[in-house]
Every structure is written in C-alpha cells, then in structure tokens.
Length: 308
Image (tube, rainbow, N blue to C red; front, side, top):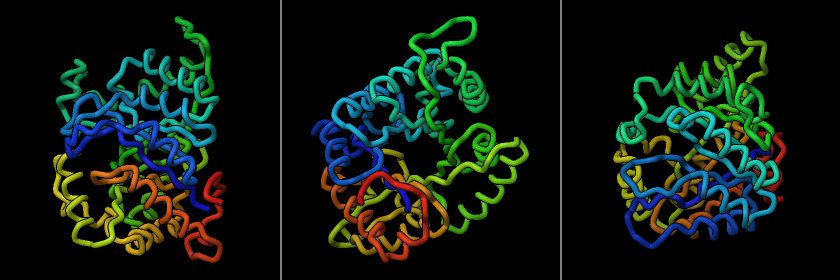
C-alpha cells in the first residue's frame, strides 16, 4: 500500500503574514493518519521561509510516530560537518524517525550567493557530502562528531540524468517532482540499471506532488496559481500537467496512476492560503485511495503505518 506524506507550512508564498502553523500542522497530519511530515529547505527564495532543521525539531517534539523528512535538504549549500550535526541531532530528538531527502537546488541562485557557495559546484558539493555523511554521523574520521547517530533513509531528488545517477549510487529512494506516471516508469527502469552497475538494489520510488483540493475547479486553480507564483516564481500553466488541482475526486483521479506506476510514497505539498484545511482535505483523499477495494489500494503492496 502506498504511504502518504504531507509538507508542513514552513513557507508563506502568499505573504499573508499570518504566521507559520508548523506544530499545529504536524499534530493535525499525525492525527489525520499521514505516515510522514516533511519540510522544504531554502535559505532564500521568492517566499518567506523558516529554517528546515528547526521546523523538523519542532515537529518531532509534538508528534510520536510519523516520520519526519527533508523534501529536500540542500546539503551542498551547507558545510558537511555542520549538516551532519544537524541530522544527528534530529535523529536523537525524533528517536530515529528522520528521513533525509537531498537535492542540488539552484533554481534560486541568490541563496548560494548568500551562503558564499559557488552555484556551479552545487552538484559536486552534494556528492562529496553524501560520500562523507555516513562516517560523519558515525563519529568516525579525523574529527569525531558525538553523539553518533544512524544514517537516516536517504532520498535523492531531481529529474536530470545526474540526479538519477546520484540516486543509483547513494539513495534508498528516488524523489522526483513534476513528472508524469509514464516518464516515471521509464526513468525507474534506467534507475534500476544504474543501481545494478553499482551492485546496489534499485531505489524505491517516491514522488512529490503539489496539490490543492477545492470545492470548485476555478477557485482551486486560482489558489494554486497564486501559490506557485509566490513560492517558485512560475506560472501554473508551466507545471499544471503534473499538479493535482481540483475537487477531491479530481485530485484522487490524478494521483491514482502514480500508485499504479509503483510509487511507494507520495508526498503532498498543500497549496493555498489555508494549509491546515488543505492537510485535512488531502488526508481524506489519501484515505479514499487507501480504502479496501479501491484500485489504488490494490495496485501497491508497500507497507504503511497510517490511515488504517
């Protein structure tokens, strides 16, 4: 059965100034039966955004069993040892519930400039950090970092050939976004070939989907359009074919083909001005897709810890 996660409201893309209900959202997501909660990670982007590691620490403090994940940490933007310390701390605070999604970013060059990190080296820096991270977390190497912590499950984001090669080399799961079920299936075959060349099993398939559930199609699209412009600086029309927007039935119908394509975990990014309401609505959609007898529930045999 497909597992379902939801991103917490750590961004203010509509610049409402109403605050960031991160802990409320984490409690709600767990109570609603989501398997995991996630946060995006940016230093600077078009929308105001909170620090990802602090937000996951807050979520860890108010939840008991949901997994907590980065979707995705810009690991190459950070100094590797400090990132390892943050990851290890979250592992301890959450009793080992952390999942580490990583990616190169680069869509917002201003955050690399702010960090003093060369934009063109972001991929190389990420690969270097991933190679060092297990040893750093275990307290090994020349400079021992204590307390040690286990390496969390690793998800690698991105759709490029280099991202696929990175996932094959390092990842437990591949986490793309803005991709069709057909392309996902085709790329997963290539991913399995690349992983086999490294003597590794094929990474599992995860997926990040931006979503908004509304009672009327027009208002749902308006909410999605405003969110995409505010958070990413892009138009809805650029990514609409990969975005779940509409009534609950429409959103469920959009997501179902991904479950049949073998995606084992779908992460939903709620769009719009009311993230808590969207978390509740998206939980209901996921519940529908997990209901016994529903084609989506029968399409996947991946184990899941919530929404029973």
